[in-house]
Image 1 (tube, rainbow, N blue to C red):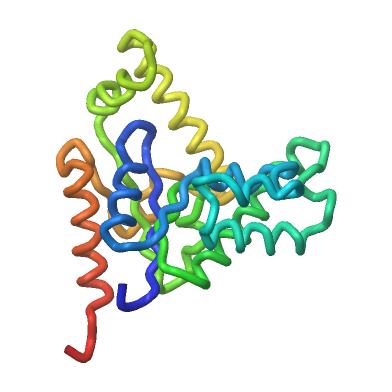
Image 2: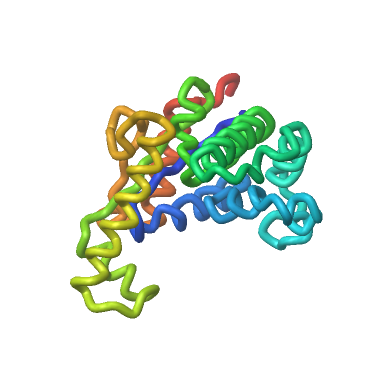
Length: 212
């Protein structure tokens, strides 16, 4: 990429948003950081014992370097706090610092973790929401969970409710509010590839290459 751009990607459960993020990152030649990777670098014991540095998903990424530096600069007992509410607040603060550190240093795709809110004031950030109708998401979920359709629908709603609650708890906002995002894309209409291509077209329009 000719300039540093960060794409944050929020998504409904089983909408294919993570696949969109990974495909986009691959096509742009940049890193994609997802919620599982942030969970790994937030593991207090793993960071202390340096286990995360050898995880194939984290090894040789800027994420580990930024997370390690942030971890070492925080009070030693902050992420081990026994009080669950305080622990979660400290965890969100820790992950927010990592996200801001990544955004300062490289172009990347960041999936989840309220990154759209954390980076809302950065002019180099594009905020995307990926969604799809319930029937489409049920079909996708059926390949992951061995549940009847009625239970799949209930499970998908419960995951989305947790996402919405997490977002509201730490941002005070509505996770699905269109005002939070630059683009809102329906994977059932555009497909994974189509959504990745649409984001790239948006990048070209919003950040045109000058001097040509």
